[in-house]
Length: 216
Image 1 (cartoon, rainbow, N blue to C red):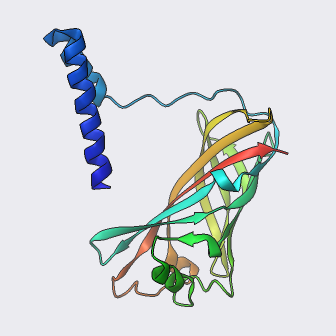
Image 2 (image 1 turned 180 degrees about the horizontal axis):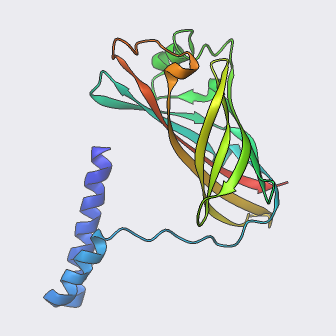
């Protein structure tokens, strides 16, 4: 994370210096520096999403998570190739299935431990699922989703905000849509308590679910 922040700052500095060289004047150079530090405005949708059912493209969908370790650092991981459907329209819905055999933290020994009964109990509960009950508009390109998360064999309510990132046409001319949701859960609420009291592994898990859907 620190490396990416440093890289970003270096890039901004390079753009600023280049702006000074090209502009040849302090006033224009200062404007370039100010612009480089200004966050970019969110891009609008390429086009309204066509109503219908969209199937996740597993190659361009993922679930990323982070959790605190020993109260001092964050450990990151990912679930590759989630599957699911998203229905765009007045009666919208979303269903997601996350395979635990696609868990990847970059360390195979840790991945095996996470799949064990200490954590996910992957042999007994091989998937994590989320099913919506309702989807309502919540501003431009955003929706409030009411639903249920099934994790570790337990199903509990979970409400998230879904952001539509874009809609348009795929490589074959099909309608496509991209969206993501970022939220936090407490794993203990789904019966995953290992190392919570000891403080070795945090209770809160930060997740981002991102998907690209292709219209059926």
